[in-house]
Length: 295
Image 1: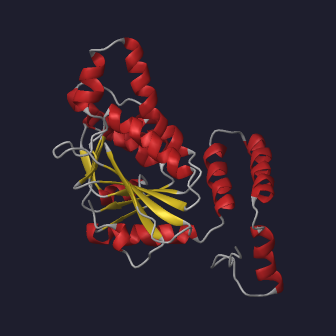
Image 2: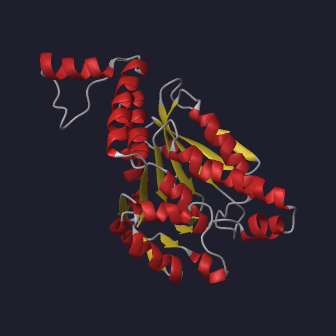
C-alpha cells in the first residue's frame, strides 16, 4: 500500500486497512477524533477489482466507521499501484450471470449500497485518494466521495465499451454530474484513458499532484476538515448535494431547514462561538480561518 498513514507525524490521522478476511484498526490517540484511511485490497493481479465479497465487507466497514465517535474523516484509497480496476469481471459478472436472476439483484444492490448510497450521504467527510488505476465501476465511489485528490500518474478509464457493455451502476450519472456532456461521452464511447492532470482539468477530482506528494496533500486536507464543526460540516455537504435535485423555491426552504437543524443538533454551539470570537473577542477572521472550537 502507499506509505502507512500511521507513521505520519500528524498522529490525528489513523488507518483502517480493509482487506478481505483481514481487518486491523489502530487508535494511537485514545478517544481523540481522527482521520481514517480505508483501503480496498484484492489479491495480486486483480488491481483491487470490486468483487461481491469486497462489496459486502465494505458496507460493514463504512457503517462501522460512520458510528465510531473517534472517526472524523474517511479517506478511501487502494492497495499497490491501483485505486480500483472497477468491477471484478469474473466474480461480479461471469459467475453472477450464471446464477439466478434474483442473485443478480442482490449483488447489484450491495455494490450500489456502499459505492454510492452510503458514500454519497456519509455522515463524515470523505476523501478519495486515487493512487493509481481507476476504471469503470470505480468512478461511482470516486464521485460519491465529497472530495478527491489523485496522483498525476494515475490512469483513469471507462473501459466498459471495450469488452461489450455500457457503463452500469451509476457511472454515467456520476460522470454527467461532475464532468459534463462532451467529455463524459468522449470517454464513455471511445474507452480511451486519461491521467490525473486531465482528471483535475475536467473537474473529476479537486487536485492532481505527483504521487510522492499524494499522501501528504491528502493528510493536510483531512486535517483541515478535522478543524471544522462536524455537525455543521455534515449539514453543509448534505445540503449542497440535495440542492442539486430541487427547485429554487424548494431549496430556499430546505437549506434554511438544514441551517436550523444544524444549530439544534450542534451541542458545542459553534454558531455562537464563532460570532463571539469574531464580534466580541476580535480573535478570528472567518473569511480566513476557522473559529477556535471549545470542546
